[in-house]
Amino acid sequence: MLKQYKYRDLAVREIINVISHYKDLRPALDAYVFSDGSSRDLMSLAGTVPVSYRGNVYNIPVCLWLLDTYPYNPPTCFVKPTSAMMIKTGKHVDANGKIYLPYLYEWKHPQSDLYGLIQVMIVLFGEEPPVFSRFTTQSPYQAVLAAGPPNRVKQGIAWPSAQTSSEELETESRSQNTEILQMQAIQQMTEDMRITWRNESSTRHSTKIKELLREPNIKNIDSLYFYKDEKYMIGSGGSGTQVYIGIRKDGIDVAIKLITKNPKNNKDFENELKLLQDLKLESKNIVRYVTCAEDEDFYYLANQLCEYDLEEYMEYLRQPEQKDRKETALRKIVKEMLLGLQVLHRAGVIHRDIKPRNVLIDKEERARLADFGISRKLDEGKSRVYTDRAGTQGWEATEILEQFEQGNAAIKAHYKQSSDIQVAGMLTYYILSDGKHPFGYVISREANILEGKRVRDDVKDSTAMDLIDWMISKDQSERPTVDKVLDHPFFWDDKRIREVLHNLGNKEEVQGCKNYKNNEKLYETVQKYTEGKTFSDWKTKAPKTWTKIGKNLPNNLLGLLRHLRNALGHREKEFYDEKMIDEFPDFLISLHRLAMEMGWEY
View (spheres, rainbow, N blue to C red):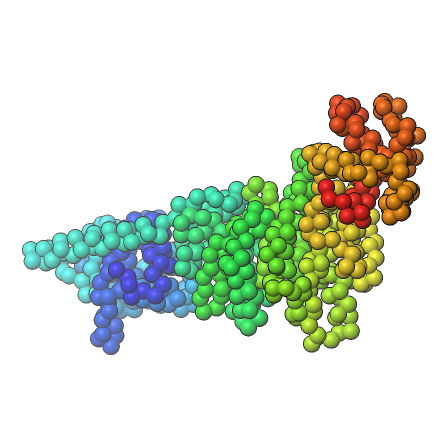
């Protein structure tokens, strides 16, 4: 049934919506005769609509025929008078009962629909009645009111007289039974289209998803359902890309990215889809791919629906009731963003467009990297990829800006994973500073990136700034890999600190630290990371409550490491009660640098 309808799902949804509001309208499939004498089986809605005229409500019989191109072409509509009525011709109805309305003439899906059409009919028929009584001139609607809603509706223009034979009644009964079967078929057919929302991904968007499921103009592309309206739009990007709340046929809520088809977008879409499908980036910190579809004009990329992008989430955390958890939440987001980048880099992928809008926050307030349209996979054995310039202004690495400083648009940029690292460092600063960029305002930002000149100092955590400055180094060779970033002291918890102190404190060189001057490299490195630090001359600065400080321990980084290792191993209660690790805030930073330069694993 309705197989000939090109947009069957849309037509059925509108029919269901209309008959839920106007109970006296009934759908049927019947032969429609065109003006050239040809006929075709078409869906119709026939019955009555309530019209208010001079204080009374009248049931006006109408029939709406839906062409097989509906809803992209308007229905053909007729007034269908009973035997007690006659058509009253006017500017909206001709002698055959055909209805002419500006709404039909200006029909444009999805702004125009059956429900809106009927509402327009009701208003205009209330001003200019389309029928009048065959037997009286007292009121154009008197016979309609007396008759009430007609108990049968047939197709065609001619209607039977008041005298109805038994043969006609039998025919009518069969027709009514056919209509009932047809209605049941439509209801059964729509069962396949009914969606039960499983609330997989979103709490924040739940109200909109429920509204979407009731939307009569919901669009269906393959297994995806959405409505292209600003009300349901949750994001936008370059090249006209828009993102809408949607739902898959199995009830999973999704974010549907509409990508306009053109040569550049086609390439980006194919690249993103290939990365998502081939790499199978299953990670809690990468936005999950769901499915895709396309039509003549767009690609539809459906991904996991998240609650916020990073900018929205940071705005949410600025609310007074979030004050106590804000700092912890932001630190967590930094780590999760970098864990997502680690997944990409281990898969040989360079993201190339890290920025606040491409970090999304899911239902569990977990950060996920998104948008891989301009990401690139490194060829095996290669450390860089040469492509056209990509990325977003203010969120590009120094070496990318340097290559384009001369304004040569034809040049190919060479991207490395270290390019991602520098921009991730900018984003880390942005998160921890509550929205500031380390290289300043937009007007001078790119110049500062080119110079390697960080101009802001909003992040007061010295450990965090040690990490950030390392990541945003102007020299690519000085930047850490993402694995080294995640092993920085900024991310060490109590368990990791315990492991580091134990493993490094037990190194042979540390156990024999009183003789460290005999090792030239060790001596020079220890001096470098002790001078000017808060823990230089630590024995004098240590609180009096610290016990059993060895007389032979040197008054430098190595001596302090050995003392803390001993305290943790033999006087654990004192170690934690005295918060020894917090006494010298730059100790862990220096220890980390020392271990790297000495090649110590821990």
